[in-house]
Length: 280
Ligand code: FAD
Image 1 (tube, protein in one colour):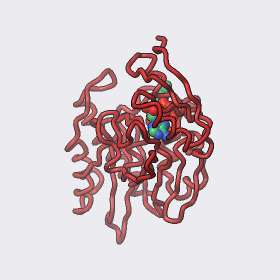
Image 2 (cartoon, helix red, strand yellow):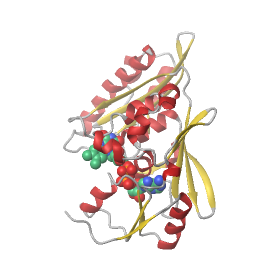
Image 3 (tube, helix red, strand yellow):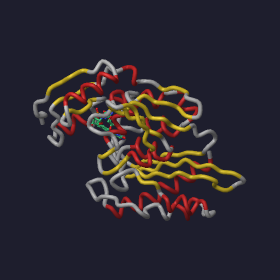
């Protein structure tokens, strides 16, 4: 289908993008890689009055060492995240998950900022960022603010970014020697996750000292599997802990799987994620 008519503005810089959003009002939308927004517009599920294109704002495309964390510009493409040596060294789960997004064409256009701001619960990137305890940097006319991943994803396709704000950076803590795993089940290689599980796990003296497990496609937002984390903290092994994976979740039924199927899948994938993370 053809999208409804819209105006088009190209931003030259992050500041220019924020200025344009302020001038154009709530019906304007940022266009990053366009791989989620344009399909929505073609289905007429989104009808922005103006697209503010940030595709050429190169100042937002970077991966930098920032001491205890790695700073990633919002316009960094999935392919760049996947191939980045700094991320592979310090936060390897994120480049791994980025490599599972869609297909090569999607990864060359789609951005980490777009995947985060879109807030799709079936996306691999938000749950991975939740498991990593990332922080989001958001800029508006009155300045910059930071939002922890635990507060950023607020509802179904809803994140803590106002219509006149720009997500500029994602800060990902270095995971050091933590074990990690991202398990994704999908029907075809380029599909979103029917269910996904991101796990970042620390061990000391043979037992789990810290675990962050986040689930993809198990509710309206990426969900921390708190009961799995609690079970691990009390000494449960991967198989027993994983049995709690669907507690507190609310998975949908759709053509890719029923709610019951997703609940069962979440347990299997959580067990696999924990086994892999603990073996690293
Ligand atoms: P856009 O489509 O440009 O924007 C998405 C939304 O975010 C819009 O509302 C836009 O206004 C807003 N936005 C964008 N950037 C910013 C910003 N900096 N600040 C504030 N708001 C912003 N994703 C997966 O995780 N896993 C998959 O397996 C997967 N498979 C896919 C398969 C196909 C065929 C396609 C088309 C997409 C797939 N995706 C998948 C989605 C892909 O990751 C998208 O690239 C991503 O969700 C959106 O990024 P984008 O840069 O294209 O954002």
